[in-house]
Image 1 (tube, rainbow, N blue to C red):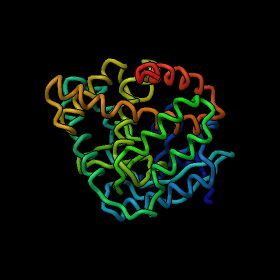
Image 2 (cartoon, one colour):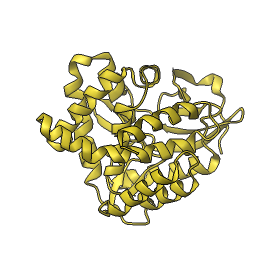
Image 3 (cartoon, one colour):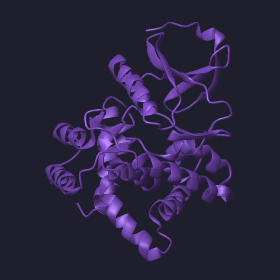
Length: 284
């Protein structure tokens, strides 16, 4: 684990879960988690390993460097992508170009989800969620039973699954686009990823979305409709309705992910509220 002199690094963003710094030579960046959002050493080492494996598959992602400890906070060093902006920021600052940017996001997601991975290379999405269902304190028994049955009925395929799929986790610059935040990367059915993005677009409140994604809830819902057009070919209300019905049940799985991540956080109460709305929408 490396120790650095943070006074020599330049902070370029202060987000809801981390501070981000550029190195003195401009070649690297450090993502340093806030208390309550900091990953453990084991989690960051796993993310470091995942990033290297993902890059070896030809999936665009920044190179990963060393694990860093700073005043009890942990972070990872990554290759600096000069001039990068997230798709969230691009859309939020240019709502009139939503179609253009969400099309890029959809196309990269399709490439990601068409990439095969050898079972065992990454965590198995089904196994992960079955274990989380056993451990969940938020989900009542009827919801656990529903989710287990959904996993059982989901076609088993070995495709790359980001695990936290949303427009904040694809960055672009003049040279291309790159997936970031790969700590939950897994092998499984892309429906788990699509449920995650559906969750972001339909169940989060304005204050969170404006802080983290530069958009309000109404704009995020429009993003989903555009995404469905380019990812699924849902170019009519009937096709969009069919896609929504297929994907919506999978919102339960990102809620499980965030329940684990937020176990000691005040934000858990907001997740519980989101869960109640999702549960009602699913007739549970």
